[in-house]
Length: 305
Image (cartoon, rainbow, N blue to C red; front, side, top):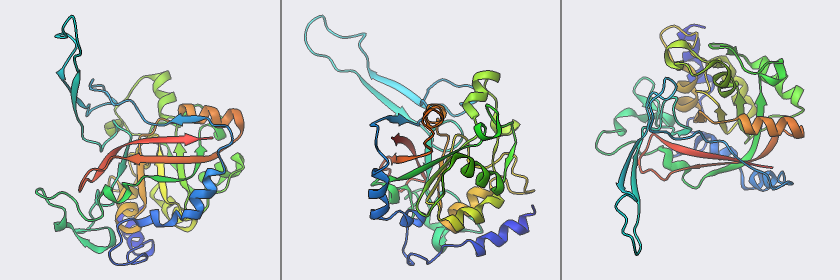
């Protein structure tokens, strides 16, 4: 695909003005109160599955931006008698491939403009990225989650590095799982990243590549009314297949569509439970931090059956 083809998506898939000129929530507007209530009806077992990766301070080839962890007060100096507190300090950069995180709609800029036609100058070093920051999701995102386990439904443990996922594969996977994708859904795509790591060892996805969706999947996501797209990697394939544009899916999704993206979920336990029970939809909760003017946030996704 040429970059000129991607540029057309900025027009044909645009949600600018759809929910008003001041809108900061984008596709979260597609999750109505009634849909959230219906999603709670999917809870029949009381089974809770966390889908966040471990936030580690140790560098690794697949953790190139580890968090900083400083013990302000440890137990080493604790008195023999009486109370003593332990305190610590964490610092991290949420974007990239290390941490489970939610992208704010201010995370990507195209032609000096970001979501809903805002001037890029509004995102400043001094003030951060308001409006359309990750604060727009500060109340949390709760709705119907749908897992598309691509390796399982192609008879494999994981997709290959750089393997491209197209619309027809998403449709076939949904059909095989007996699940539909509907307006307001949180769509979760498993590529088997962690299954591959367990078998082959960690790898540098930035330079070697990783499996993910092709940008041409976006019209289908737009048509279906997906509210959040999530995956065990960066959501889109690396390399992108679009010369001159590394992250075309992120650019169109965030800037034009206002489609929220959750990257780097841990999906192995969720996939195992779905396979055992034959259930591929569930209540899904995303809880970002209330980071003022943030372009993204560490995230704790939770599936409830």
